[in-house]
Length: 121
Length: 115
Image 1 (cartoon, rainbow over the protein chains, first blue to last red):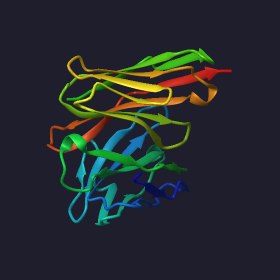
Image 2: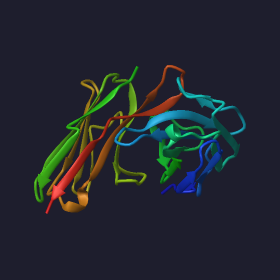
Image 3: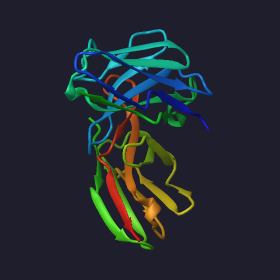
């Protein structure tokens, strides 16, 4: 089956620094990837949709200047948390749309990465 | 706006019991529904994916049903085991207000199976 990886799996950083998280589709090309955030004991909330070669689409309430998304290739999307603060500490999960292109929307699904836990001190 | 609710929020059962987890969604115009398992501090493991045209899916001791018209899905776990202890998430795949297709996740059910 399709595999999505994330790196790093764990990151601890000081307040004010920037952190980059990578999401890779290992055995398929992903024109569209998604970034979710999960706070403790809460469900996953979609932050943004990342499209290869174009600007990301952000959900309401998500600061695009704080959470920079770059989808420069068909297998890699990156999320950079700029000037991270303790309230940004969370579990960040990415997913990749499958099939990559075409097909019926009813057959479309997403494969999820293992997540990255961010702790900002 | 699509909203997904899961009941109960938490469940503790003795080993061997059959149990049912519930998921409800407000907009029946979905393309598929997926049940996931999440262990503490870990990512998501897909358990079952039900397309909008399907009524149920089975995998081993798991059976998921979908009633689109009433906005409900259930996950049935037979003969529960301590290893089933985890949080179970329901997610519906539908078209958002911006026109993009996306998953909306439920609040999850935290299951604990006692040995």
